[in-house]
Length: 301
Image 1 (cartoon, one colour):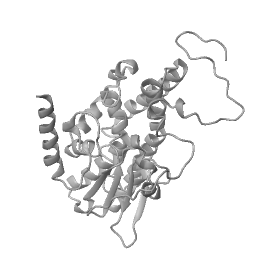
Image 2 (spheres, helix red, strand yellow):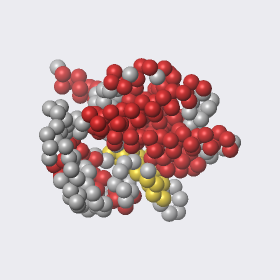
Image 3 (tube, one colour):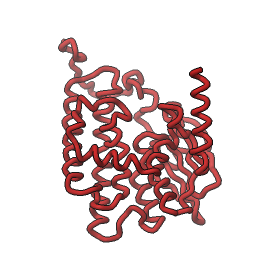
Image 4 (cartoon, helix red, strand yellow):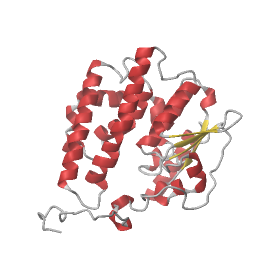
């Protein structure tokens, strides 16, 4: 290895054959590995509702809980669900039961037990489409042009989010040391994506047009969280205040009651009053949140 500037790690020459170094993953070293499959036997719990969600309130998890709460808000009683916390820091996603639902070992994962044979659905975008179609194309237009626009923006997000979270977010906020080239590369792409989003929201109220759709539900937890600093603070670095249309759209969606509830489900971090680690009934928002607020106040006293 050759010498590098003081603010940079030594120049790296890839070996002939890559080998896994468990110590090189930074904050997420314990949850990333180069092989699939379960690490331990653990059955998943099953609640009383046909829809069983296994998740955590990361942006990908929030997509689905917002969708479920929006369905309930719209009067779809069949969308009642149990939401079980999958603690990825503890490796819950590598339990045998979870791997059976999602062989990719990523949250969220859904078991739809409403029919004669349970249906597993994994990947957040697939879950959104499944739920939309299950409830009469709710938040997914049937008119061909609007449907195509919705699905196009949904797939845009599914392709963009890894650059935002796994790329920029990792190297800027979570990596064991900062690498100028990596941060510059991903910051440039994230700002390009923000510009794409801002231009679109300058010509339409929502991503697919004048209707709020699953494309907005998928995108908001990622880009809304970014511009409001809800996951990590990078707003000044990325000049997010310049994206006025994204800011308008973010604030507008944040005021929806279902979005406020959806952000809380399977949340195990942040202010105690914002957490609802598991959700099994609509009343859980009121009773469990109040318990957490009282517990927090007691701890402060």
